[in-house]
Image (cartoon, rainbow, N blue to C red):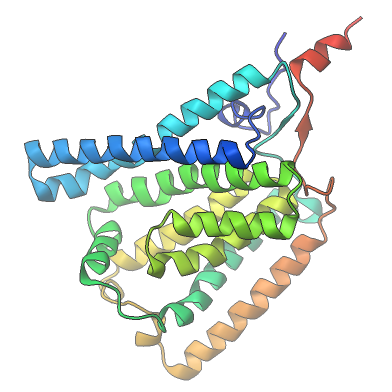
Length: 303
């Protein structure tokens, strides 16, 4: 009989336990993402044709964005189903929170996420001016219809992007014996690349490495989704604020001394959180990922 799902894991996550992609398989996943992106663009075109360009921008993303990931998720789930009887698997989501527990780790990493995002703002402000079309697009994602944007930015993006970048890419690299440092850096770079522009890619790389380290130490995909949710929802709330919606960088609204104090506090907070996470005992060289025996191995042990 198939193994029972552990209560601490989402059943959806268990659909991918026995699909642990190597580099070649990750390239196939990227191809499926392209297929999904094409399908999403067709949906946007259809919305534009029937509802007009403005309505298409506002409403089509709710359908087009998750559609981009669905072909890759279906492919990975099918591969996992076929692999459960022939090879061991690795859980997407574990719960190795150490002495801090779930609540303590949650509060720590949420604070670390906001600190990292604030500190990266300084480096983003040094980049060339953002193209007008991109600036308008990003502000539309945070300053338009709040609930539609909340679904896309705060719910869909954390779920689908963490499934891909940590659950598939990082878990696959770690499980295929790539050194943790490089696995985290590569998955962070992948996270940056899927944003397709320098102005989002730079903070995405740093946040992606932070998310990756948290996943490596705790094995918890739920925790990285919470971090992603925290970052995106904070940006969304700033975009809805009358006093902050036209802001590009925090240097525009904070006095230099106040900005410097918050920046230094953010760096200190990040260091303390990383230090605390480093004290969580790792289960193996792959961090806190849980290996699951194949169903064939389970059955072979029955008397």
